[in-house]
Image (tube, rainbow, N blue to C red):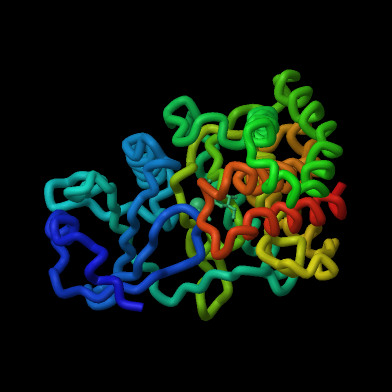
Length: 343
Ligand code: GN1
Ligand code: MG
């Protein structure tokens, strides 16, 4: 599909791109519009930021500047995907409709995976995210701004689910009867989360917060991690968020979009590889208390995503991109099945 007409000329101008570029859709993200700019050498990635999700794109830009500068100073050999500036040195371009765009380098000879195929891949992906966390271990989280408020706060997500349930169309609730009951039955996980946070035993860190498997680029030839991508939610968080989303998206042989629930199983060898891979760079950085929470991480993040997909279904699919009206409900069902296996 050619979408050149969808990139406003004023955006091309601000980034110094030729007006005759060809672009095509890239990736499977649920939030932004992501385009591969094909004919600009070297290739680049252009994204229209979803500003109803990210209401403060300047917070993202601030965080990327701080992290980019920190890494350049302390870990100069580390490959961090800095965004490309506009001609006047800005982080983003704004079009005449007030839509916000950014430009990124395209990483050549890299591949993303939608599903993990082996424990070795799982180890490597987790090692990559662990290395990222390790390199940012010395950066004070207060230097970063939250880009989405209470993003992985399980109590808040449960509250949002309850609000959605109270306000939904009865027909949407009827369709989700079983999923609502299942989501409610897992509520003790919210109390476990609250207890953990209240105890103060988990230190705030700089976390990626979207460590799903397709947010890491593997070297096409060596299979080693080249870099982590999708840095919008880089902000203060707890380590269980990052390990947890890796568990959520890797242990199961099928993705969150799978509708055949019989395919939802837990691969324990992949789970063990994830934990080992994450710990390779992080074992001497995590506290003993943090290590004790490892078994909670995957459950917590799977539950949060089940609640978010279900709430979005009840809200009439206003947040995530969907391919059909029951897509969010199907994703919620998938995540609840996975949670049942994990719990
Ligand atoms: C969204 O944009 P994408 O697809 O990387 C979401 C994540 C969810 C994920 C579920 C800002 O990420 O939190 O884990 O979908 N990002 C935001 O696939 O809400
Ligand atoms: Mg994302």
